[in-house]
Structures are given as structure tokens and as C-alpha cells.
Image (cartoon, rainbow, N blue to C red; front, side):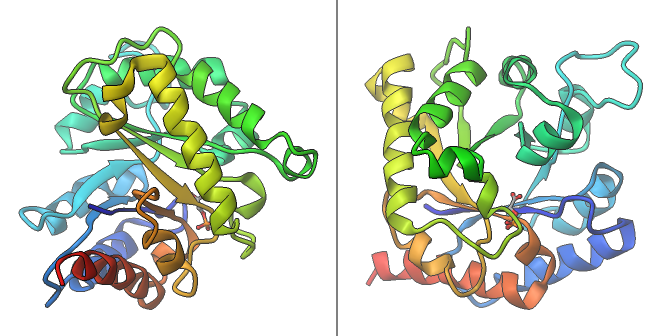
Length: 258
Ligand code: PGA
């Protein structure tokens, strides 16, 4: 299976989200083997988009969550609220939140623990800066982020996690990481899981790549067995580009059945 996550960020309002959700559903039309598709609109559009994707097989995700169930946390949203809206996945620790809102590894960890106690699946984002990349520190940074995100996590048999490896220098720049670097980092992520939670845990985690995934490079990532999917930002709000990305996943899946 391949997973495609569309992160619409703060790029669309409610009306545009509804139109984009309709367009996204159409990308699957006529395809025999389809990827798992998770769309993450802004919070304000979740309930309207939910109506569009109802019974379609396309899943709803959120872009952020808080770490408490309820209480005096102005402006925040809990997993209980997300569940009420039919949200099955939530992005945690996206680099834009780390950068603009000061989200730390500790906060990411609190969110991961809170989300794993709910029915929602966390999508944990990790990735190094350009300076760290150039200094050859990618493995160290990703390992540290992942271990701190998973601190005190007791993985139960039914828990599922997604890890999105998103190098900061690749996000929104048009400069995607090369496939061999992505594979190396994905292997590291899986080995950390094995170290933290045992060999069987690797079947509970999906490892994705994100950062300037577009219609030109999606296939080269998706055809790799070690890449469980992609997290798409900019190209996910341009329906013609997104259609090609979805079709690249369909082609990979269809080729497995030839
Ligand atoms: P991008 O964003 O596809 O625009 O690089 C990816 C992300 O931020 O998740």
C-alpha cells in the first residue's frame, strides 16, 4: 500500500477546500488500485470537507492538535474534537510549527502521547535544516527528533504511526531530496523503531517522504518499496499536479498486480 497525505496548510478557505476535496476525489475515478489518501484541510474546513469525502474512502486529517483533552487552552483543539469531526490522522511537529510557533521536541512528544491515547493516528514530522544537512548531521538530528517525539511511548499492538521525513531545505523550495538520501533516512527511522519498540513494531509504522514532492518526482519516490508514501504540500492544492501524483501511486500499485 502507498499513502498520500495532502497538507493544504493555510492555503485554502472553506469554499476552496470543498472544491479541492471534490477535485481530489475525482483523481481516483477509474483507477483500479488506489493509494490511501488522507487530506488535511485547515481546521475551519474540516466539517464541510468531511461531507464531501464521506463514504469515499478518502480519509480526513488535521494539521495540528493540542495535548490535553479539554480545558483553558485558548485557540487549541483536542483529539476528542477531531474525532467528533471524523478525523483519523493528525500532523504533529511540522517544521513550520516548529519554526514559526516554537514547537519543541518536548511539545511534539506530549502531542504524540495524547494522540496515541485516542483513535487518531499521529503523523510525526522530522527533518534537518540545510546547515545540518550540509554538516552531515542528518542522521543525528532525525534520530534525536524521533527518539524525543517517542519518549515514554508504549506502543500497543493496535497503535499505528506515520513518520514523515521532511528535510526543511526541501519544503516549499522545489529542491526535493534525492531518492538515495531519502532511503538512507527511512532505513534509519525503521531501525530506531526497532530499537525502541522491537522488531514487530516496524509493521505498525509507515515512513513517508515530504518536501517539494511534485508530479515530476513523485513516481521516483513512490516506486521504492521502502517509501510507504509521500506528504505533499504546495502541489496538493494544485489539482492537476496532485492528480498526477495520485496517478503515480496508482501506477506503482497497479504494477504490483501485473
Ligand atoms: P511542500 O510541503 O510539498 O510544499 O514542499 C511539504 C510539507 O510542508 O509538508
